[in-house]
Every structure is written in C-alpha cells, then in structure tokens.
Image (cartoon, rainbow, N blue to C red; front, side):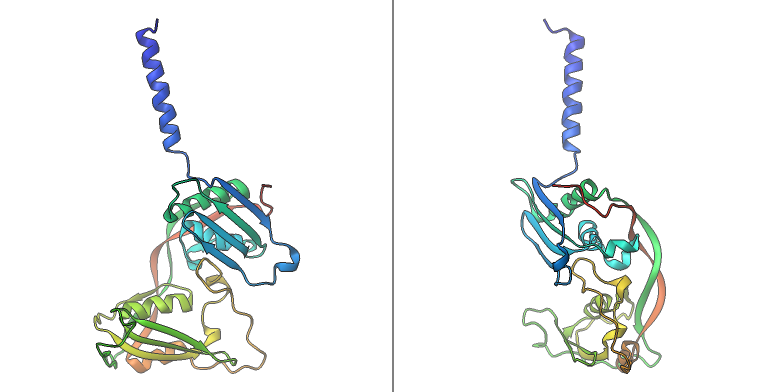
Length: 271
C-alpha cells in the first residue's frame, strides 16, 4: 500500500527527474575529435555545417569557439595558443536535430573534450562609425535594376598579386557597406550616415590594411593574411578611398557582447 507521503515523494522525484532531463545541455549523439596530422596542418581548413552535423578539418579551437558561441574574432578574448593547434572534428546530432541546435551542441562538445571554460559579458571595444564628411555625401543613387536582381545588393571583391583590393557594391545601402567593412577591417562598423537610399560604389584599397591576426580566423572569417612582401608599397588606404564619396570612418568605442575564454586544454579528451 502506497502511503500519502510516499506518493508525494514519488511525485517530487519524478518532477526532479523531468526537470533534470529538460535542462541537460544539448549534445551530439556521436562525435570524433582528433588533432590534425602534422603533415596536413599547412593545408587549407575545410568546414561544413549540415542540418544535423558539423564537419571541421584543420581548424583551430579559436575557430570552433567562434562558431559555437556565434561571435566574431573581435568579440573574443583568450590565450593566444587557441589559434595554434589544429583539429579535425566530425559530430552528428540525435534524430530531430535542427541546424540551429548545432552551436549549443558544439558548446557542450568543447566543454567535454577541451575542458573549455568561458563566459559572456559586455565590454567597450574599439569600433568605427561610418558618418558623413564635412561637405556631405557625394553618392549617386543606384538605378532600379542595379543589385542582385532580387531587390538586394550585389557585392564583389577582387584582388591583384601586389595586394591591391577592389570592393564593388551595386544597389547597396549604407548598412550593406557597413557590414562589408566590418568583415574587411575586423572590427564593428556602425552606420550613422542617416542615408536610406541604395547606391553603386567602388572602393580601392590595400589588402594589408584589412583584418589582421587578432581580427580574423573565426567562423565565416578569412584566415590571417601572411606578412606583406618586403619592399611592398603600402597602397591607398580604405579610410582615404571612402572619402571620395563624402564619407568617413571615425574611431569610437561601443558596448558589445564578448566571449572571454578563461581556460581550455590543448589535447582533447580521446574519443
């Protein structure tokens, strides 16, 4: 015979069990984490994200953290070695996994295999404000047919062997420009021009003025550029190039969510 107290205890135990199950961090069903073989670390990294799995080859822990926490390199603070060792990670989620579940699963995997300890906080970090020059904008509005043909902007990049870059935007807003410059310069670019139309513009600048080692190498970011060739001319500055449109970039600190990596281990826990 089950007493009243026993029934209450059983109910509480069941509730606690259900609560524990509902709050367990999401994790991959199967995962392989290995250090990249020494003879392959000079190869290009390869990464793909599917509906229910990730497959990263020759990536750094820095890269993995950027993916797992959804932050750019300029939002990450941690030991320099996070950019050095290379790893191959292949992981698959359980049945019913959605693509948006994968970053959280990656957080769990990094904590389990690399003993990653990290937290997020708000910090004032350097940014660039895109604003108008003293003589106002010198932009020509794009024709209705300009852009990607679907109402959006068309953005193209090209580069020469000497390190000269060209950014060609057709039918782009100031937000398009700000977002593109954020990726190129490796720090947030905030649009405060007040301009709301779409424009066509071309920017020429030096490749070696763009994002450096401390602002690249994260998920969906380019790897750090090699040092410029000895004796190479610096080329035109992107800060100068943008002035021909009556725009300017002004340095300013802005509050931003950042990831602080407190600790991690180089050698992952074996599979």
